[in-house]
Structure formats: structure tokens, C-alpha cells
Image (tube, rainbow, N blue to C red; front, side, top):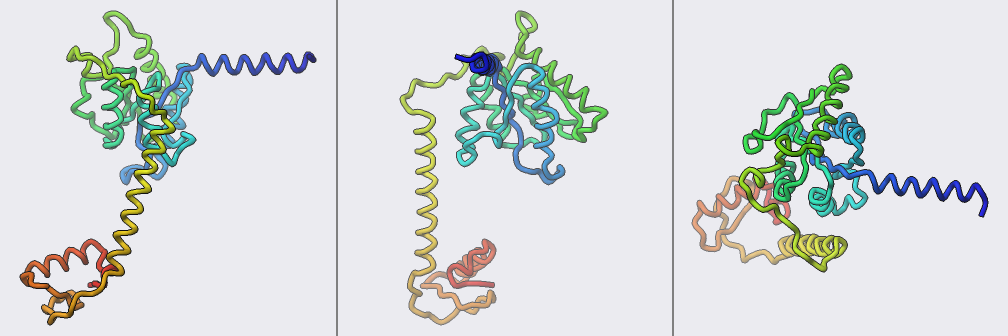
Length: 263
């Protein structure tokens, strides 16, 4: 074996060892744009604040939209919320999906660092836990200090012990037993496949329902009720008020054109 080959194998071995030694961090945070923030704001929060802070503390960080299986993003999220060595949870904008994922993380009583920007009030249910606040403007003048503060919060959370030990959830406060996953022979791949099958089934039902509405034969014509919506509609014995309410609802939902009724 040549010296060059041996050197290359040693480098690969060191890289693999380093990857194993690095711990995982998952960012629980808003993914989509929020009307109160500029487009792409939370992606910048991740790239410029959360990720570098986690890396400074020795973690490999990712968030939901960086996972490979983005088409099954909800399965990946729950898996990583449970399995990550550390979670950093950004409560800015009070996103309901974020609060849901935080609830799952807290049920397992695993290390979690809470952060929020200076534009968002604290969430009452987790107000008693320690937060790391950052400036929502992400200005260079404050970003460096915000990174250092978050890195320290990570180190304090995972390195605390004794009287200084961090409390991650109400599970500890109430003396409850942390949740645990039941033993199961179902693999993550099986779970993704089952979820995909359900989505296809719902989509198929929606398509068939739409086709049934489109191609159902028209009822026998009855003298129109004079509804002001513009088309004739037949009651089949229903009171005039009831038919008018239905017609109004059809137009309001924007589906009138699919069943031959429009405003």
C-alpha cells in the first residue's frame, strides 16, 4: 500500500471519528415567512445566529428545510425533535408549529435552549424557563454579542449539574416521568411509507369527489326561486331561505363554478 493511500485512509478515519464525536442540534423554529417580518427573515436567523452559535458549542446543527427528505418533512421533524442531542427553540412570532414541537421535546425532558427576539412577548406557559433574547434586526453591532450569549446558553444548559442543573420542562417541575418511545418493529422508512399512502388516499378521495360533483346529472328543473345571485337554483322542497343560505355559502367559498353556480 502506498504512503499516499495510507495517508488518505487515515484522514478519512479522522473525519469519521470527528463526525461521531460531534453532537446533533436541531433548530425548532418558523420555516415559512411571516407577514410581520421581511421575506427570508427566519432563514437568516438560522444562518447568522443559531447555526454558528451551535457550531461554536461543538454541535452539528440543522433545521427542517435542510433535511434530505423534504417531501416527508413532518416525519423528519418529529424524529429530530425527539432524537437530537440538543434543540434550540425560537419562539419568535409565536408560531403554533414551533409550540407543538416544543411540547413534544419537553415531554421527553431533553436539553432545550429557548430563544426569542426583542419583538416577541414571552409565551406564558414557558415564561418560567430561561430565555436567550436576540435583536430581530440582526445588525452586525449586536449579532456578535447575541451569538456569544446563545453559545453560553447552550453550554450552561448541557453542562449544568447539581444545584445549577437546568430544568428543561414542566416534567421536572412536577416530578413526572419523562415520556419514552415504545418498542416497535416499525422502521422510520415504514412510517414514511404509511404516511405517504394516507396522503395519496386523501388526494384520490378529493379528486373522485370533485369529479362526482362535476359530472353528476342535473336535477329535474323546478321553477326558479328568484335568488339574486344570478343563476337559477332549485329547492327540491327546501324552504327558500335555506336554499339562499346554501347558494350564498357556495359563492363565498369560491366553489360555485365547479358545480355550475356563480355569482
